Length: 421
Image (cartoon, rainbow, N blue to C red; front, side, top):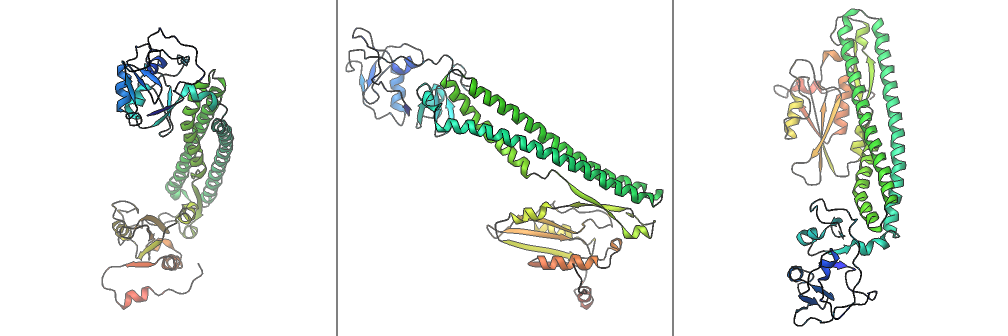
C-alpha cells in the first residue's frame, strides 16, 4: 500500500535529540506510541503494530525496516500532524475518521478500511491532497456537472408538463368521440361504452401516475442537487470539500441516469377510438360500439435500435387454432403472447416479440404473432388479406398453422387477390 504525501519533507519543525522517537503513522491518527523501528524507504518511525502491518502489505513488505537498536537515535524534525478532528466518520468503522481515498476503487476510506480492503492499492491521504484538489479541473468538473444536471432537471420537468397536457387532451378528445357516437345508438351498448372508457381511464391513470412519480423524482433530484451545491460551497475545509465532492459523484451519476431514463421512457399511452362500421348497420352484435386501439409508435423505434442480425418468424392461420401458444413454445416460454380461453380471437393485428436466438449467437429471434384469419367479427373482407400479406413480406420464415392435411383446399385459401396495403 502506498500512501501519497506521507513522507517527511523539508518543511519540518526542528526536533530534539533527547526526545524518544514516536510512531509517525500513529501520530497522524492522534496517538503517541514509542517507535521500535525505522523504515529507510518511507523515512518513518513505527511502533511494533505498524511494523507488523508494514511487513504484510504488498507495497511495503520488502522495505528496509531497522530495529530499535539500529534505528537513528536522534528524533527527526517533525511535521505538524494534519488536523483530522473535523473529518467525517467512516460508516463501516464509526470511531475512525475518513482520511484516505482509494483512486483504484473510487472509495473514501478510514485506516481500518485501508488495512482490510486496500492493502495493494495506492492511497491518497486526504489532508495532504485536499488543498490542491479544490483548485483542480476534476473538482471544477463536478461543480459544472451539478449545474448541468440542474438545467437538465428543469428541462425534464417542462417535458413532463407537456406530456401531462397531451395525456389529458387525448383523453378528453377520445372520450368525446365515444360519447358522440353513443348518442346515435341505444342503451344496449352501455356495457361496451363503460369498458372502453375504463381502458382509457386506466391508461390516463397509468400515465398520470407515471408522470407524477417522475415529477417527484425530478423534484427530489433538484433538492439533492441544491443541497450538494450548497454543501460543496459551504464546507470550511478543503478536506470536507473533497469528501463532499466524492460523495456527490455517485449521486450525480444516479441523477443523470434517472434523467436519461425519463427522456426515453414512453409517458403517453397512445390510443384512439375507432368506429365499428358494422355497428352503424346492426346493433345486436357483441363488441358493436367499437374498440380502443393502442397506438404502438415506439415499436419501430425499438426495432430500429436492434444492431444484430435478425431471424424473423411469422405465424398465420385460422383464428382460435393455437397460433399464440405455438409461438410461445418457439420462444421457449410459457408466457409472452396472450392466450385466450374463449371462442373469440385474442390477437389483434400483428404482435412483435424479440428474443435472443436459442442457437445462433449474437442473433435476434423476432416473432410475429398475427391476428387469426376468417374471424367473422372483422367485417372487412380485405382485413385478412392485409394481415397475411404484411406478415409474409416481413418475415424470413412463415409458419402456416392449420388443422388436418395440407390439401388443395388449403392451398386455395392461401390465394388472396392483390390488395393495397
